[in-house]
Length: 146
Image (tube, rainbow, N blue to C red; front, side):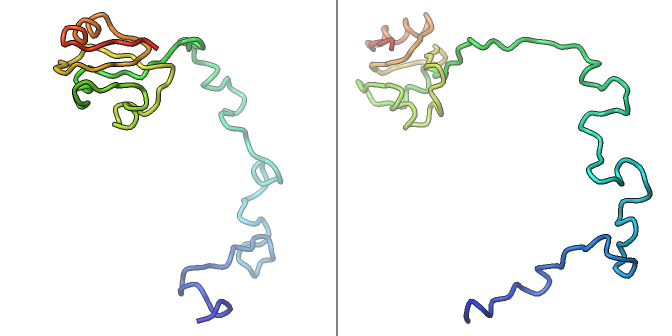
């Protein structure tokens, strides 16, 4: 086999449809565009959302809601998830990402008190809920706010 003899499998490639090339082609005269009208002209088509001049749906419906540009989004970690780490280990953002607890740090990490913690760990995060602080310190762990 040589590069100049390679061909696609039978039926794998088709010739392109050559429209507007005379009546013998089967796609001559109006070239599959029908008769007259805006969509038959070159460059003619209605823009997305155009409803023939009536007020479009996206302008008829009222605006709702608000997205705060300054809102902070925290990656949330529960105490039950931190149980996977070994006794006395230091748990920071890198350790959490490597273990698969969080995908992205976002604007920081927040530790919540869902579940139980039985090991004393050194946990480094941006925020802790009050109940999480209490549970971590009660088992002899330490908290470091970044």
